[in-house]
Image (cartoon, rainbow, N blue to C red; front, side, top):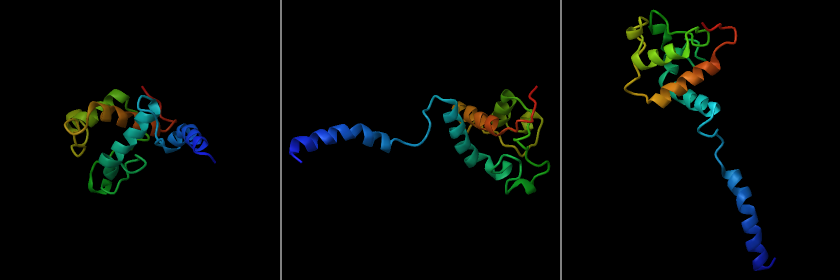
Length: 128
């Protein structure tokens, strides 16, 4: 192949190669992206008590009385979940063992965790 054809083939393949190298995660401003980011935050901050499925059966759950909330069956609305994440259980009249994450997590991270929790909620739960 002549040098001109090699250069032309290279130019034509650049968009294909760029698409192949694109990261495999959703665009930032989509509900799917918020759910993905929220699941990452959940894995780092919540999984130990609430469990991988969010059902309150994490490795540390047996250490607490009351047990961590089953977030899959929770009937609390998004605003309540945001507040309890931000302020902690004691401030919300719930378990003192639920820490306040308001000084640790950004507003976006808290909103993303709430999006993740919405995505794992059982369809049988009726919201008020």
